[in-house]
Structures are given as C-alpha cells and as structure tokens.
Length: 108
Image (cartoon, rainbow, N blue to C red; front, side, top):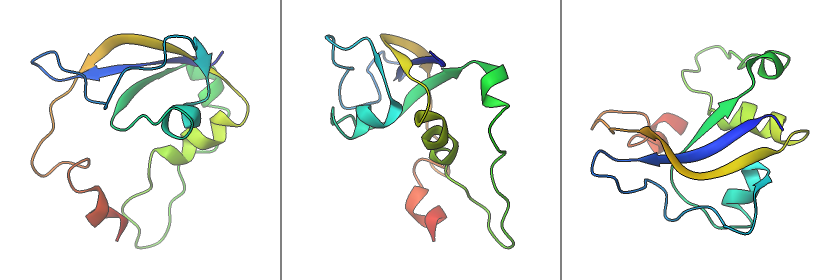
C-alpha cells in the first residue's frame, strides 16, 4: 500500500464527491474510483513520501502553466494500491477564481 484516499468535505459537513467509496472494497487503484465505481468530485490523497519521491517531478513545458495533478497519480497507480477511507480527512473551500472552478480554462 502506498497510502490512503479519503473524503473531502465542505464546512457544512457535506462530502465534495458525488458519493462515498464502495463499502465492500477496502483498497484499490485511484483510477478505479472514477472509472469502475463512478466517483465524481474531489477526494484527498495521503501518500508515503519516500515512494512518491522516486517518481519523476511534474514536467515543465515551455509556455505551459498547468500540468494536471493526475499525471503523477496515474504513474503511481500502475504499481501501488491505496486504502479507501470512507471518512472525511480534509475540509475544503473553493474560491471563485480557483483551479477547480476554472479547470477547463486551464486546459486551454
């Protein structure tokens, strides 16, 4: 196991994603949550630092200002599983000009 995936919640206690993780599955790949299990929305990753440092840094491209975080998650996903924790581990607040709200604009 490389780490834990847990839930993000808003200040009011509601979870950010469209639902919790499947209760019959205790561990798996990050990509399974979004593909196989239909999860949508933000969740929180807690990784073992020593392992993550073995992976390449985020690439830097000339005139590029945004590389999705999923780039590194997908590389790690090829080799390691994560524990699914159906508990909130982070309270989040989204800003009107933040990355999540403007993700499509950042892709362009």
